Image (cartoon, rainbow, N blue to C red):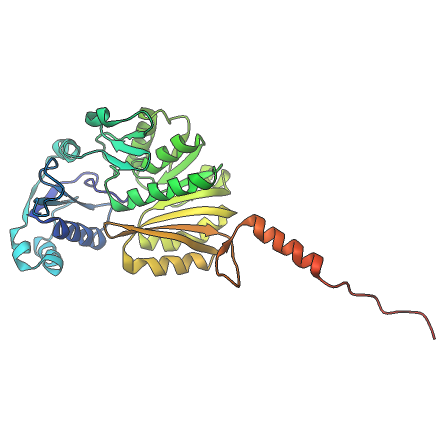
Length: 343
């Protein structure tokens, strides 16, 4: 559910105009400090058409709240990363729920990640013949593809696709369903998706149908993989979870239980200080780090359930583990039985 749209039933908003680095820092600290189910933040260019080389192009940071925020507390957080002057310029107000959904998408440009292109209905003209296009319309659910964690997951999904075609796929905390739809269009497989928010579940169903993936994407209301359908379809050989560090750590044993040996696990929604704790939690389940990337301060991890080589430290594939065990068996010296012949 980690993404840059306002939360369900948003009633209040904070806005601040500043430069890009400050806007991203403020958005990040707000996302880290508040419950993501009740608060969301996004940073974007004030004039998207301006030349990208101009570092002085003004940016806007917006934070949406499901209840009246403690303005002094929010200003204190802003001051931590941007100083008192920036904190004093923050403007608070109420927001019309009908308007913020539309306005939040009208200024968004399509997002290209490899062959994937995430766009709104108003940007259909940007789609090329070879694109894997994902249309995400205004909805009461997180997910437009602009967040660094979402882009990181799409990059990792493309990396997995270059090596193999997973058969059983799970999307934990699916949000608007971008990752589930991307995997469905890429692999033409059934994708089982869960989220703790019923509005997200309905949004995923609608988004999947809009993108011609309705027969592949199966969303359910679930915490982690705690749903009969998700359990019945296990074990999985690809799991995607773009949520936050604390639930990712807590889910490590369950994800290990629901995956094949050799499964790929894509984890995101992490800032730098969270990464080692998440890696350690999964290492305890024999799930090891293969690749790490960072986009806009958000880390995405590609993990692999398997066994490490004692010499190189690299994660071994299932086939290599099987060969090594067979070689060890063949090379084991035969133990002859003691002779029973009497002298």
